[in-house]
Picture 1 (tube, rainbow, N blue to C red):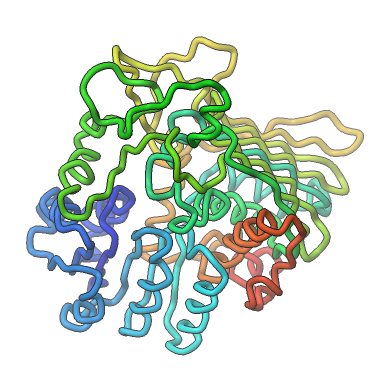
Picture 2: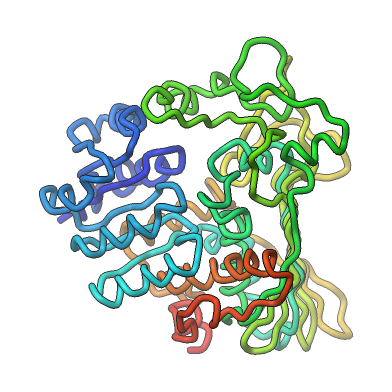
Length: 451
């Protein structure tokens, strides 16, 4: 018998889950309903695949009714981040389990609301962290778990988003921290989850600094940059920081053609006023067992990828991932807007930096060695397909503890939430006091490593 799903929030991110239901996991999953405030977006996904021709369409106010009348077993939440908690809690209380796209939610009160609903209903919430499944991140996890570099004492983690991908967060609803929690929550939840999972530990204290240093009207004016048109969809020449929705059939259908229903503009100027999310962030995070994380995020880098150094009592592991070596505008109008971690980038790279990944381990008093990383197939370094199998088929025994539950989701956002509080106060923030949730209980990831 197939599990019946409803999906709420049928924007761009929904496609990964819908394609899995209609494709490789059609034998165990079926879509019962598409729910969105915008009728064009839900109709787009219904009409895109023949398997969805008969699915029910509805608005968010119908969630409970749809769960009951369509015998929905699980709800997939891919709505705007600020609505995650509302949709998760309502689905749980209506009798369905939940699969929610990261971040679980954006602030401490809504995290507590989700925890309370889980305690009341006894139902489950799965937060999808596909980076755990990427072979390169798994290889680093295996090195740490093996004890080869000893007990971890510190982590240095730098993530850079380039001027295509990074800029895109400042065109969309993410630019307003009230919607997304800023990049500390929306984007860095992935990164903090990786560290939590690599260490099988819990963040205890966060001190953060950051600001809007490149995007936004003030930063652009300070550099003497001319303002851009209000939106990127227009005729004539285009700036490399603009997005013309007509350049991508899916974006045009999901957003430009849907504007008449809700007025949402997906192509706003990254150098306009009203942006409240930071584009440069740093954090120092103390972990419960003593390790310290030094983290940095930049959203306007000329290349995209990340570098991680794990320092242990017996040696050091270093992972470097270059997802896009350089941003070179393609074509006469310079329009090329893709996430290089989710979509393969095939443009020629003429500089000294090359797309790829490398994991190096060096023990004390020994030469360094390179660890072979199995080749991943598909989006996000090969992580998407493995994650979707765990979501729809069910997790198998995993000594690395990759499947994640709601507590992993809370641990991941805890750093960003406390980071935002630290930005406001200028002081370190104690995680337990700020969250008001006991994060010490074992999750599958921690239990697997400790077993």
